[in-house]
Every structure is written in C-alpha cells, then in structure tokens.
Image 1: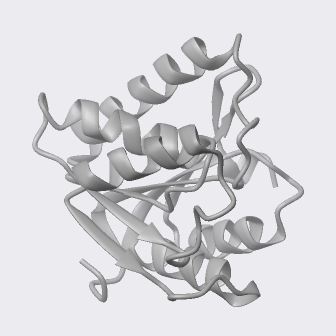
Image 2: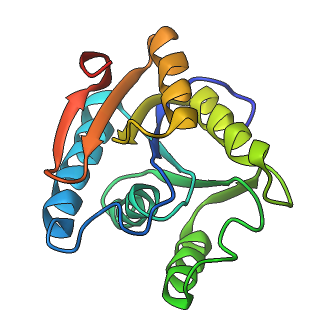
Amino acid sequence: MIGYRGNDRACAIVGMDDPNAIKGEAEPAVREALKRLMISIITDCSCSEFISGMHRGGELLGAELAIELKNEHKIKLWGILSSEEQWVEWTAAEKDRFFSLMEKADYEYRVSDRQTNESRIKQLRIIEEEAGIIIAFRSRENREINAMLARAIKKRKKVYAFDPENAEISSFPELV
C-alpha cells in the first residue's frame, strides 16, 4: 500500500493526539456513529483498508473499530506511525491499548525513528496520499490536519468531518 497513492478502497481516520477528544459520556454514541459510518464506507464504497495514525482519541477508536469489523468484513488495518516515540509520554493504559491494537493491525509503517516537528506532518502526508476517503475528527485548531484535508479536497477525495461532541457527521467542504 505505501507508495500506491490514492487507493480508492482505503479510508483514513485522522484526529489530534488528544486523550480527552472523546468525552466519557459521549463515547458510546461516538463509537456507534463512527462504526455505522465505517460500515457504510465498506459497503457503499467497497473500502477494503483502513488507515490510522494511531494517536489517542479518534485515531485509536477508529483502529479499534476496524479490528472489530475485520471479523464481518474482509478489511485490513494499517497503523501508520509518526515515529517509534509516538507513545512514549502516554499513560500505561494508553500504551497497553496502543500495543494491543498494533499487534492486531495487518501492517505497520513508521515515518521516523524519532519524534520531530516534521514527523507528524510527514505522517499526515502519507495518510492523505494513501487514502481515497478520509474521516477527520473535527478540530479547527490543528493546522497540520486542516492542511492535509485541504489537499485531499483539492484532489477530490471524499472527506467526512466527525464531531466527537455530538457524533454528527458532515461533508468537510461544507465546513470550510
């Protein structure tokens, strides 16, 4: 997959690295809405691969759901990491979840051995190049993600904005 560029059958799930991106009381609704969207993308768009940057919040939730859906659908999960150090400052529980998901992922790709300012930007560029569809956990504050989404829209890729506060999904160009 890496290097294929623009796989119409691949869907990326991106969001800020934020352990509090999905509030506790909203988590069941967010999980259910994201799962429904992913199933729709699998069935309506013939999606066969999901890509996650494996950061805390929406990316890890998306990876978790992709693994759950692997039993029912013939899909694969790519974990594209910004660096080997991506998880170093996480809590023990967050690390356990991350490593459990990475063990179940079909493929792993690391952009860099060390975490730098450029490693997340490179990670997002690779994810954007590889996916034909992108689910973005909404956050107007993240320049890198917003730049990636603008490039994806310019390339006529389908982009969904997912609001973790109310589990609403919309087409991203309507938000720009």
